[in-house]
Amino acid sequence: MKNYLVKQLYRSLFYPLLFLALVWLVFYIQNLRADHLTQLGVLPREARGLAGILLSVFIHNDFSHIASNSIPLLVLGLMLFFFYRKIAVPAFIWIWLISGLWLWIGGRNNAQHPTYHIGASTLVYGLATFLFFSGVFRRHLQLMAASAMVVFMYGGIMWGIFPLKTEISWEGHLFGSLAGVLVAFNYREEGPQRRRYDWENETDELELLQEEALPDLAEESGEAPIQLEDNRITGYQIRYLYKEEKGEDKSPSSSDKSG
Image 1 (cartoon, helix red, strand yellow):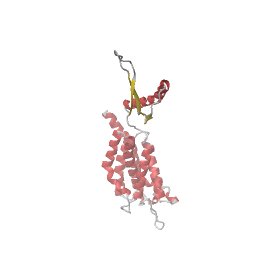
Image 2: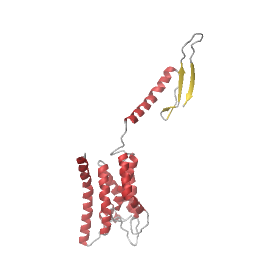
Image 3: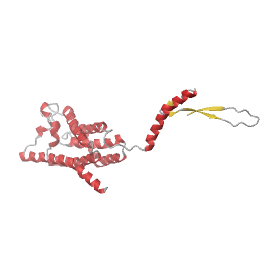
Image 4: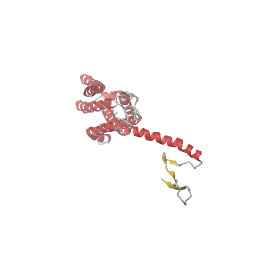
């Protein structure tokens, strides 16, 4: 069991590390050229800014900028591929594309001074909300524990979705967060699911049998059909038969109850 978990951790680290290596490679090339490559960022509502939907996550302003995004990308990426291995790649790509597109549509831009939005923080916010809401939507105990871990480690970053600092692309944070929620909702029926216990299945089967069989029994006996509400019996009839004794006639009596 221990060896299996170690192997899973190594496998889960592969794609986040690969992506992070590309981010740092671009940053290294950028420094060699003494060019910030800002023009490859998202320029909202401008045709030349469309390339930024794909490329902006690789562009960072300085060392502190890229460093602040690197560890959250690695940790959240590890959690994504560890807990949601089968849907991790498409979920990551959709968060990336949707957040970039929404940022291009709704981000700030100044006609006199073009405003480029750069950085991988859109992915950080998208992964954080995806991991949190995926556990909530699935009502899966272990995945909800992962959701709690995300809140504990990165809950404070959610202040970044508000326009508190104009020099920060809070729109990227906001649209990244919304993209994470949307993707989590879309994939809620795929990947790991809450365990369904036998008693739950038996209850569903019993209710289905009641729905199908009870009306037929009522027709055969000539009695009024039993009313069902939310798959539960709300009216029923109890008959008592008394043993005949000396001096008494055998006669059935009945009483009705409504539940």
